[in-house]
Amino acid sequence: MREVIKKFINYFYRKVLYLPFIILLLLFATYIFSNNFRYFLYYLNIDPNFLLAFITVITLLLSIIGNRKEREYNFNLNLHNFTRERVESVVGKLFVLMNNSNIYLKTIKDIKHSMDKNKKFIDANDVLSLTHSQINIESIGAYITMYFGPYIQEDWNLLYDKINKIGSNCSNILGNYNENYNPIGTEHFENEVLSNIDAIINESVILNKEIYDLTEEMKNTLLNIVVANDNKIKQKYIK
Image 1: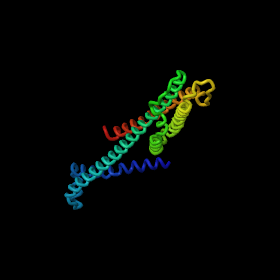
Image 2 (image 1 turned 90 degrees about the horizontal axis):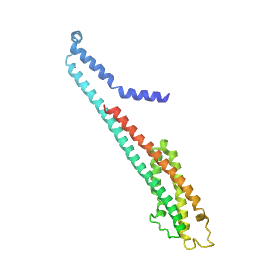
Image 3 (image 1 turned 30 degrees about the horizontal axis):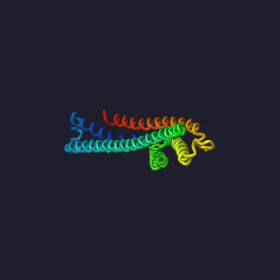
């Protein structure tokens, strides 16, 4: 009920200036085309110069209506541009996280390949630095919470957990590999993490796929918000 009342009040506020404008316009037309109306005014001893006042008031009302529409358009356009910029920022960071996930998975697989071939693995991607890129995660989380929470907050929480998990898998594998490189492959070598690398790879493959799906879903949701705002502005102001 409150929403209905609020919508009615907003509608009345937007249209309130049109009523006196229409009344004045009708009176003006009546004065121009009706001899009886002009005679009636003359009989009441009303100065015909009120015609000039009619024109002035009508012009003033038109100016007020036009200015209000222009202010409303500028406000909505600025709000739309603000939203678009935040969407671009969030989508860009989502792609960074998705790319990091791919690097984590590839690194684990490359370590496994190096172990099987008895070759030294070189971390060309500096993966351990990726696991500490909290600035990106914190800023994207803040944007989502502040501006897009009702749309993608739940998906973001899932993505955050999964990117942390695959990153932990990668750092654990890489850390254990670096610490135990020399004894790897010897007869009595044992390491709980490296011994389970196949299971960790399988888990990370699933995590990487889920991260990709969540990223695509959130990206599409955010882009739909921008498209919907574009359409609203076009329908309301561009005819």
